[in-house]
Length: 160
Image 1: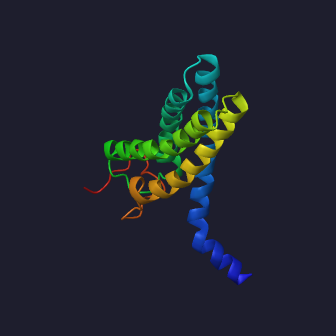
Image 2: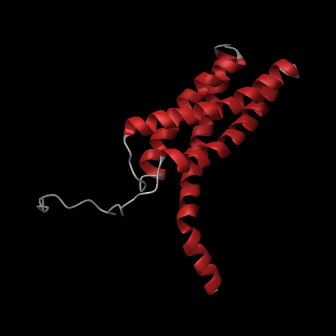
C-alpha cells in the first residue's frame, strides 16, 4: 500500500493535468467535430477548409481552458508569447488532421460523411498527442517559484 501511495504522490500532478487537459480536450473535440460538420455538410465548404475553420474555433476555446484551468499553476510567460506558441503548435497539429483528411478524400476518394468524420477523429487523435507534449514543453512552462494557492484577502496591506 505504501508503494501505491508513493507512486500516486509522484505522479499526482501529471494525473491531474491529464484529467484537466482531457476535459478541455473533450469539449474542444465536440466543438471541432460540430464545426467541421457544419462547415463541411451545412455550408458545403471543402474538407480541408472546413477543418481549418473548425480547428481555429476549437483551438481558441482550448487555449483559454488550458491557460486558465489546466495549466494555471504553471509559469505565465506572457499571454502574447503563449498565444503565439499555442497557435503555432496547433498549426503543426492541424497538419496531422489535414494529412489524414486529405489522404482519405483525395487519395482514397472516400467523400461520404462517415469517412470524413473518421478521418477527422484520427487526425484529432494524432494531433492531441503532439499538443499535450508540446504545450507542456514550450507553452505552459513549469513554475520557477511556487504560485500561491490563494490570493491575499481584500483590505490586507501587503509589504512592498
